[in-house]
Amino acid sequence: MEFANRLVGAAMRATNNNTVINVCLVGSFLALSVRSMNQQKDIEALEAEKDSLRKSNKAMKKTMWDWKQQLFAEAESDAALVPLARLKAIYGEAPSPPIGDTVKEDAKSPASKIVI
Image (cartoon, rainbow, N blue to C red; front, side, top):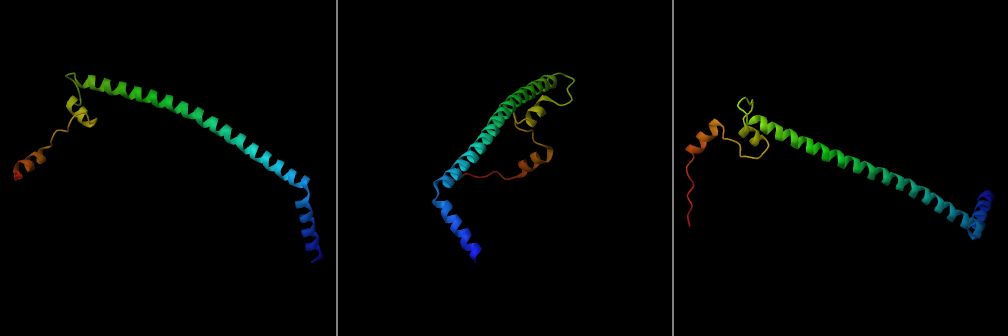
């Protein structure tokens, strides 16, 4: 019990001592400064990576656009493996052509009447 009383007494004297409080405050400030510097380095590294990724994405988009244009140009020739209309349907630039059974089903369905 005496040890606990001494420990509490030492803690009370330390809290009343301005030097101890100042040391704790300076230590906290230093710890926060170090953490802030580390976070700043991380932010700068992420920004550099972001710029690099943007450039890479732009280059890939341009390459894909060039490939698509080349593919369309090749599809316009007579020896094309895939017709141009089918390629445009794949890329969503034209409506897809109806497939055999769907046309027959649509023809058999009764026309809807609009009553006003």
